[in-house]
Structures are given as structure tokens and as C-alpha cells.
Length: 44
Image 1 (tube, rainbow, N blue to C red):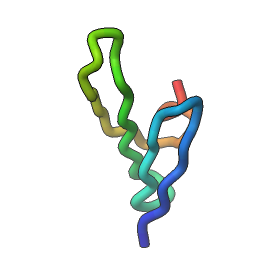
Image 2: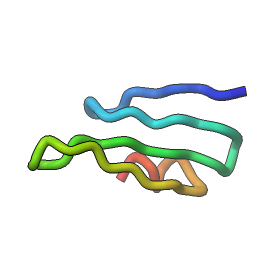
Image 3: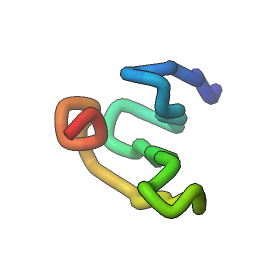
Image 4: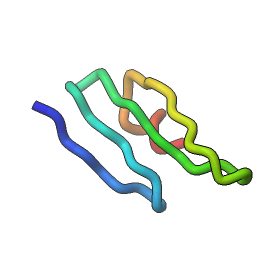
């Protein structure tokens, strides 16, 4: 089951307890994303 969170205006998708993908809008207005193993790492 997937869960979406909004943190400081950015979206974090939680796929499992150790699989997170974060999406941010960079200073140029483009969307960037990365995969993390903890929610705290995705929030940074």
C-alpha cells in the first residue's frame, strides 16, 4: 500500500517502511526526484 505525504510543499511517496520517493521543484522550476530508505532522509 502506498501513502503520500506533503512536507514543506514537496511530495513524498511511501511505498513501504524502507522505500520512499521524494519529489521537489528546484529553483529552475523543474521537478526532481530521488529514492530514500528512511522518511527522515526523504524529508532532507
